[in-house]
Length: 46
Image (cartoon, rainbow, N blue to C red; front, side, top):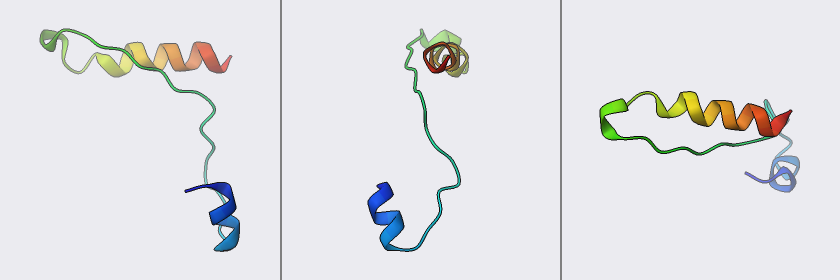
């Protein structure tokens, strides 16, 4: 939901997304994708 719509509804945000990360791995490594994408997101966020 946009911040504009939230204000219209009188809602306060619970969190703010400051960065995202994307990665792809072989299916044999299923479950490890979030590890690499989290590292990328944290690096971009500083």
